[in-house]
Image 1: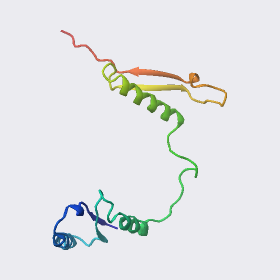
Image 2: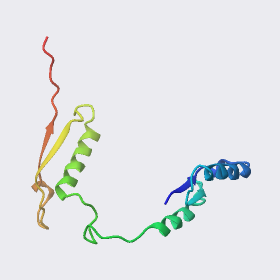
Image 3: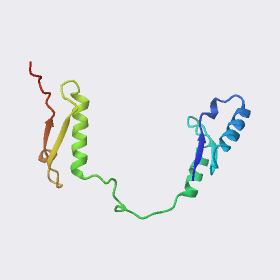
Image 4: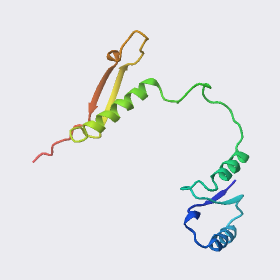
Length: 129
């Protein structure tokens, strides 16, 4: 299915232009639906959602029902640390940084200090003169 959304209808002063645009688009391809919307005001968005729901089918679950992500705990911890390092030390640290998380299994009685992470930085090579 192909659904066309024509955005920014809130800016149109003359709605006849919208009708002409819809007619022109209709001649290009046999679209399933053409929906005028305004993302800014939300006009037409309920219609878009309902149209999509009409084509969506329930499929197979690939993850457990309570799974929030397909990333491992190690990957999440690594990216969180990398993000903070780049945000707060952006002038000192090159963007070529990798965070190796060695231990992530925290138990209820353990504190975050039990995480062992190594920051591996890309080193700039000096050119020989």
